Length: 313
Image (tube, rainbow, N blue to C red; front, side):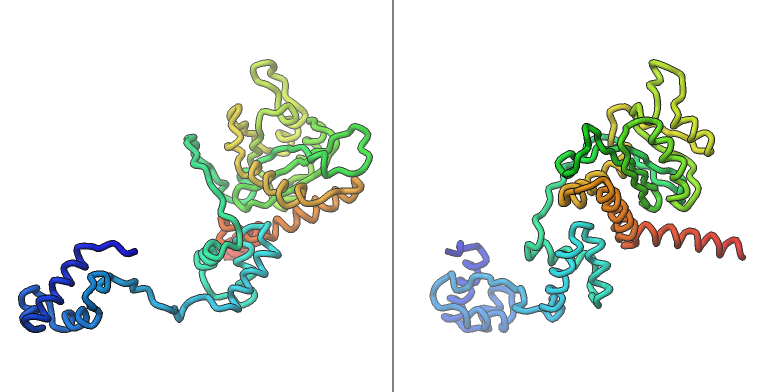
């Protein structure tokens, strides 16, 4: 039942006065126009609730999404939703979708195509530093390959994924190894620039023993550090117990678990390495919101094409 408001009581007094003294007198007394009085009299049936304010929302919107657009969003979300809404939006645009990214996201939320995620606010003060060009700053980390997705005899060996991500372009290079050691990470570093496709200036790592030694225990450099110096790369360490400082590579590891390791099982080591390679290629060709709906490969190619134009001029 609708509650009776002061506005409804005012309109009732207006209507009662108009019935007794006429519309013109009511308009003068209540400082309004006769058209307003006529509209209220047309609605008034003796009950104050008949004068309740009604919604002014239009019954239909000529600019609303049609069924073809909604069906396109559903199909692209089903096929590419794991890779993020930016990739869904780019795929929709290739199929003729003309709306904005925010409009697409609004329809996804409104119609319940995906469950909303709760984002916790971080109270940690940390100033993020993005690279200024491809290779300016590359984050490197290593993670375990979950044992539950390895369905072939490993004879006690653990598998690890070494990941490098360029902060400017978000381009990644992945490699599966059997050993968490400076020998494997230094071998990986020797091939990194070739696989990235550009020169690397700074490598950012955590304080794991597979990268660097504890400075409080020894001044000796690891094999990884010697290789980095030989290649002309600077090594920057994150603060102890501060994984968010390597946030881009940590976030990409979470995506690997959701897209790759959480959905597939591997029957051989070759199958594992092939799947990781395909996943890396797909990631580097997937659009990102942070890259203005472009893929890492597109960002790298655009940057170096601009550099070549500048050099020609």
